[in-house]
Length: 552
Image 1 (cartoon, helix red, strand yellow):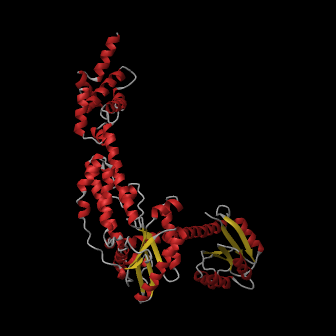
Image 2: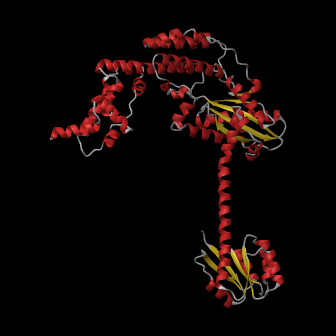
């Protein structure tokens, strides 16, 4: 426990000395003992020093104990007080009770009573300090948790899972219950994220997100309150929720648009970061943020990769063009061509496949960011299916991940059609390499590798599926190949190696049968004995006896 400071207030010096002698100060963790001759001196000391307990004589000149208690109650309500008096006076007692003193002691002071009262006061201080520390800790924890709670709330609205997470208490806790408040969502898409993260942020995407969100906050704080978070399903996108007091949506939208244009220019100047920003319409309630976010994404996805570069990359929902119905036939009709290119390993044919898709896209009047993402998603699905058809395990493919291009190790930056063409070629090449690698693994497989593994690790739990998964071959094929080569199945060979090793170990009389069983990987001694008998027509104990007979 931290130290305690005490003040003794009495006009009689002998009584002050007696209290100092009688008190068990070290045991009570008392660090300083101050003294005052009257109430006025006591108040001066209380103003200068941090004091926890005051021992107050009720009969003093200038300012008596009753008057002092009244002042303490007003100025220092947390100070614990103990009344000491030689007069069993009802008025004093009444004031003491009114001032919530710890206890009331009569002169002459008794050592045991004094220390008991002091211990009570010290325990009260300890309990209070612990409560305050816990309160401070809870406050710090809450302040640290509030951003996360707010992030979860916004994400639940964005992905429509708010029914299980949203609550009025949570809305109040994160400060989203303010009246006369307008909110809008903005989606900020980083076109050259990979290039920038390598050049300026040592490939730390989280650090890049942090830098961008700080700039968003700084630029918008003049007019708005903002909260930004990285989209967990798309690392290239930052979602910003903007709020302001007022009821005029047009005014907010106008200011927000110009602030986002300023943000776009600032990010370009500071980091050479190219962004597209979609803005949703301002809404009056927090639940309506779902609609505003949808609008901001539609505006973002309408960004034309074949645009005039002089046009702004900040798009309001009301300005976004309607997304065209995309013709998938150009991709799906070429699946056989793609399959042939991958099967034969023909790089030229693979490049032709990508170039034909690009040319088809390039002849269109426009090609939006949303259309490009749908195309990439469809291509990844097709490549995944074909790769698995060629024997590539699903664990080696970007299946069920938020950013499949990142999982493929590709630079997924693109801001125009030329970069889109390069990305298509990179995707095709990445899948070709995986298929080629799988083919090489299959051809380099040797059945002897399985036998060597069993010879070394016979004491482990060995299953055929281990080898099937390692070499990407079927269980049945491996078992057939092994038996053709060694005349025994894989399980049969494991048993054979263990039993031969058992004969060696049984020759050591120091080893118990139970120990040998465990050394060979058997959890059950009886199962080991049964397996040994099946192979050698005798139990391990009988075999050991036969060895002893031979020695004699």
